View 1 (cartoon, helix red, strand yellow):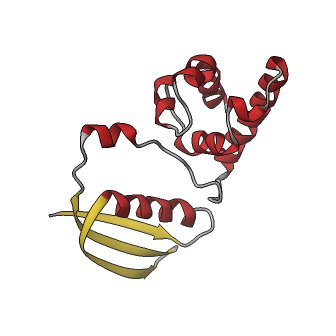
View 2 (cartoon, rainbow, N blue to C red):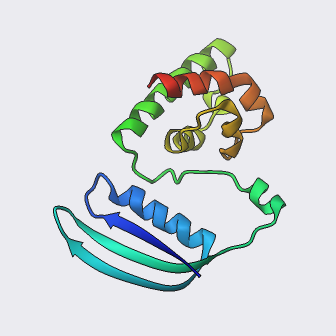
Length: 149
């Protein structure tokens, strides 16, 4: 049995991100027992202690999982800057290539990139909707945008 501590801060700045981390952890593991407590310190937060076992996945299951951000999740200020830069790039690319912008990347894909923040173009394969074609055609530019924002 393993133990994981997760802090869910209540401020608007962190609550969605912390809740997403908790939700993801709950999906990825078998929870055997949990404890929670409300803490009032300099900031108020929920302290969650999870006793768990890791879910065993086959290699094919791991490879088939792709990151996809919930489009309703709020973005922090850095993620908004990234998303705005990606949308501007996509609009220019769409105009240059005379194709609809969603052929280049959908809003959901751009949100996923802003949340996931891949460091190398190979990591774009972890984004749902990004395959070999999109990575080859747009990967370097997307990583360049992420590095410059």
